[in-house]
Length: 212
Picture 1 (tube, rainbow, N blue to C red):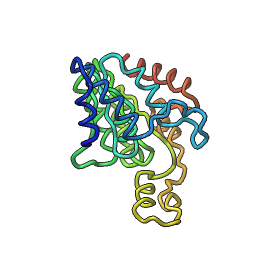
Picture 2 (cartoon, rainbow, N blue to C red; picture 1 turned 180 degrees about the vertical axis):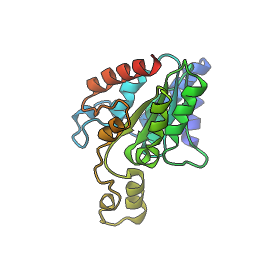
Picture 3 (cartoon, one colour; picture 1 turned 90 degrees about the horizontal axis):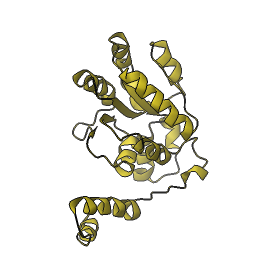
Picture 4 (cartoon, rainbow, N blue to C red; picture 1 turned 45 degrees about the vertical axis):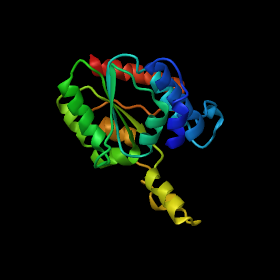
């Protein structure tokens, strides 16, 4: 943090220019920010790719609710939030699954503004029945669920702090639930995404449905 603050002091000109410069330094020096992630094979869509695509859709008013999990890090690192977009994080208690009820409440409180939640599959399974409330009351919200069939924030942390060869992911697997099927069974729309083009098209369609 001290290194980042010292570097930011050298950035001249306006407040906005300084902010952009700090963001650039963070992406270059604090953690990797690889735009060429499409060549990676460990996931159908890399989270960084997803965040870059999402950024292009955050141009008008929108309330974004980010759940507890690795999606916290991806959004912190990859999204640049400017008004009229507002983003909400659970930085106090940090309960998994909070974004589902929060996004529904956000939409009820500001019906004219799109309400979007980003969560992992573990968080979704915590409070997924909140979706039924949205369906019954016809509240239009959009949930982006990052699915890797694992409590990854837990398994990755255990691997780091325990420093053993144990397969921690095996201990925190979720059982490969059919999330799309579950959403549809509750009367909502769902789509499993396999490409960035598919993501942006689906997001545009679902945001349009949620605001109609």
